[in-house]
Length: 107
Image: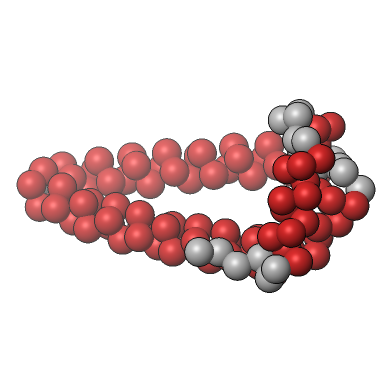
């Protein structure tokens, strides 16, 4: 059931994006291409900056706020990465353990 909802959300996201793009084309025709292009560039720049900031907040949250869960999954239960697909060695797990015990600071 969860897979269905994820697929439905992705499909709706695609449809919404497509409709916005189509509406933008209509606006471009009505306003004139040059004026519309300048406005689109401003919107794209704002969205890029917004996603950059949100992404950095997400990285901070995942690395600092969830360090106890990272410690549990990587060092104690050895379940991350899933099925050890990347071939993480005990030495690498020890490096992560030391990093978390020292405060998990991002520099």
